[in-house]
Amino acid sequence: MSKVSFTRMDEGTEADYALLHKLEQDYVSALPARILKALEGLDDTLAGYQVTRLEHSLQSATRAEADGADIELVVAALIHDIGDDLAPENHSQMAAAIIRPYVRAEVTWILEMHGLFQMKYYADKLGLNPDERERYRDHQWFHSCEQFCRDWDQMSFDPSYESKPLSYFVPMVEEIFSRPAFDPDIIQEHA
Image (cartoon, rainbow, N blue to C red; front, side, top):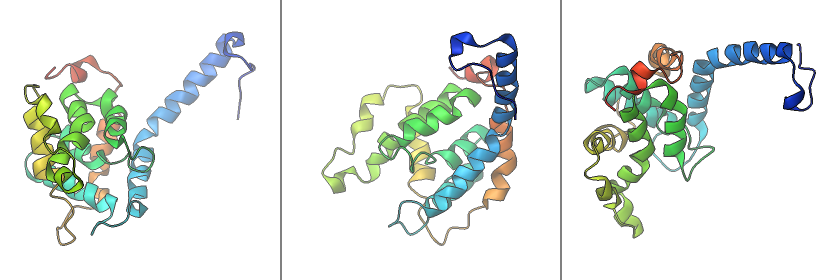
């Protein structure tokens, strides 16, 4: 494989950066496959639940689609906990950062905030405030995040629920993560 000639970025040539640009384009085009691999990895993560994190994600996405959510929200439901392995304390922000370049701002906000909103259902059992989300009550997407957590996320720990398999969601993941990053027509929608 070809490599650049420099050991410091400020010494790179046009040919070096042309090579890196081409390699980066190839790498970015393989993003959907890496997202899917990361989702598969959720099949062997945090123990203690009645379903794996992958099954939880599949249930969330299946519920979102059944409720008529658009493709952006279905994929968001699918990847909302993708950061559990590497960012357990801020997995919501990691998921939001991953999807941000490809979806409207509302979807990113929902993913970024879902961890806080989800506390509504369990924080009191840990001596925490279940109403922390109330400080965002006047936010334009409060109700969207509330629905995401109430109807899809917190409901999706049921071993008897018949979710769709990951293979069903592959075309959706490929569509979302193959979009041009930061496309203003997508990002500004509903902003």
